Image (cartoon, rainbow, N blue to C red; front, top):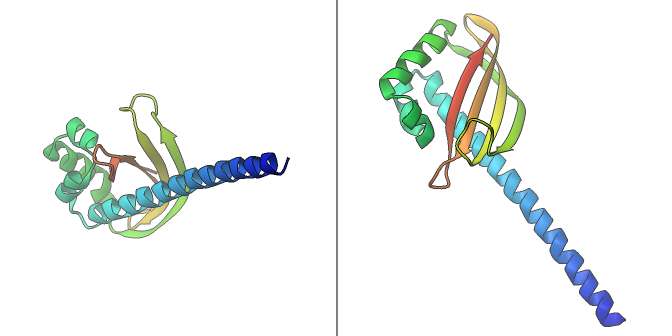
Length: 143
């Protein structure tokens, strides 16, 4: 009986540690995705649109050329003026979302304020790229 209790305890401990590790891994991935998002947004905020294309996920780069990206992001962000504030309001981990290449993604939504637009929502979608690094795969700014 003592041996059975000890085995049961060890099995329960192993399950608990595995669950904790999964939670830690997800938490760690979320932190890495947020960090990648913030670094990428800093490039966009500084008007370094070409560099933001270079720093994006491979699937992003496959979908839009550097020239197309610069034209699109200039049209979307240029009129807004300088960033005043940005606050993360929602984060949602996603696995294999529809209409996207398979993989791990995080949808991050920020409430932002710009010089010429007091209230906007920015959605940034980092993904775990082929090399395991988190990089931005999508960006939208809405009024």
